[in-house]
Image 1 (tube, helix red, strand yellow):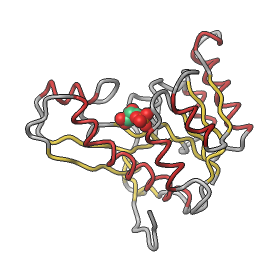
Image 2 (cartoon, protein in one colour):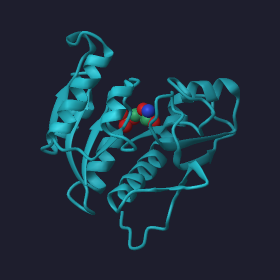
Image 3 (cartoon, protein in one colour):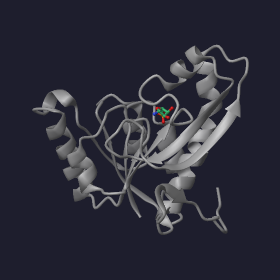
Image 4 (cartoon, rainbow, N blue to C red):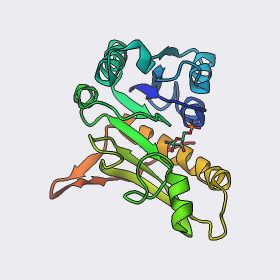
Length: 208
Ligand code: GRF
């Protein structure tokens, strides 16, 4: 499956996909885009020999035009699955229409708690004792799409966002790679009686 990744920042989730899946298990990362030309994620992709392009908002008339340009570039690379790996922008519905049911995101909270930006800070401010990670399909809302996978971690004494992020990062990498692997193996089914419920089958012979 041809994968396109959008990332705004460090790109550790992208790196996990490159290290664990790229060129294996039917997964090929063929394009990595960003809203930020200076994003370390782009350098990581380049180092892996993957095509990269930045789509800064300032170079386009508006957000929709930027998103259409991004979708056009990914479509031109014949991308079949778009992975948002720390992409800190909302996607225009026109982008999603180009890849129906084919955009997934990783979020550093147990949705539906703490959607949007600053999820870890929101969770800390709320005083939660259990943090976590969600991988989900992207719909037109803010982190509201059907959930593919979640993992929790108890951090009853956490006070610092960096400490929580460090605990969550390995879980993100594992869950996101697992979701990509599942999509590459034929997609994920939805419960016909409850379309929000993603049916997750066991992955036989999976390797990490
Ligand atoms: C992750 O915490 C992801 O959940 C959030 O942004 C962060 C990206 O990290 N949306 P990285 O750029 O993949 O290292």
